[in-house]
Amino acid sequence: MPHPIVHHARTTGSALKNWFVAQCYDALAVAALWLVGLLIIRVPFAPLWALLGGAFQFVPQLGAVLGLAGPALALFFGNIDHLRWEPFLELLILYALIVVIDGLWLQPYIMRRTVKVPIWASILTPIVLGIVIPFWGVLLAPPLLAVIYAYRRKNQQAIDDALQSEPKPERLPGSS
Figure 1 (cartoon, helix red, strand yellow):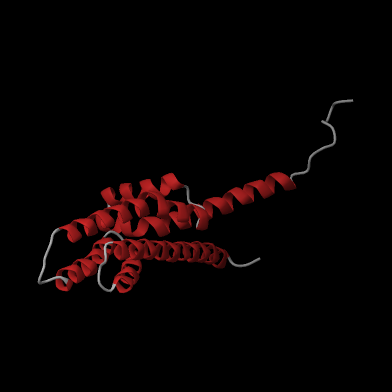
Figure 2 (tube, rainbow, N blue to C red):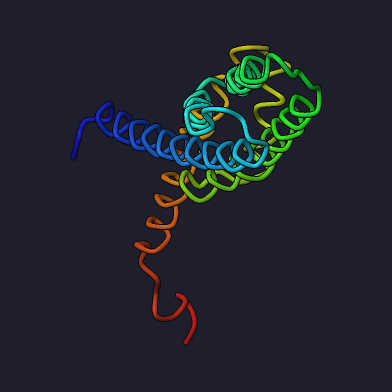
């Protein structure tokens, strides 16, 4: 039997690996959303900005805003002779849609499928930890959830194994 530290390191490491895989899936999905939206509103260099928008998904809260800056500058400098406000409004609407879709549906769904964290926990924990520990709470909530639920599954599995290995008498003592 491995040392307890090795056991905990494996559990924590596999939980964090699964969380990272979920983050990669989320970044790819957000990049695809950015690409479709930017192509629809005809932003110059749309694939580049979509790729950067997906890569910035690894930075909580600030990453979404950084993903918005590149397309906004491309719209500004791409049409500097004929500046109109409509493309900027369309870009802000696209940004809002992507943030809402990712925050309330996409990321919790991916976390549930990949890391086995319930959707309610994926939505509520960053909010609560963001209030308790403003920046660090939001940053640490998803990987912390992944580790907590990995240990929860391990404990539940150990309890189930113990219940199954208990000897069960054919009949109760004292009964004839």
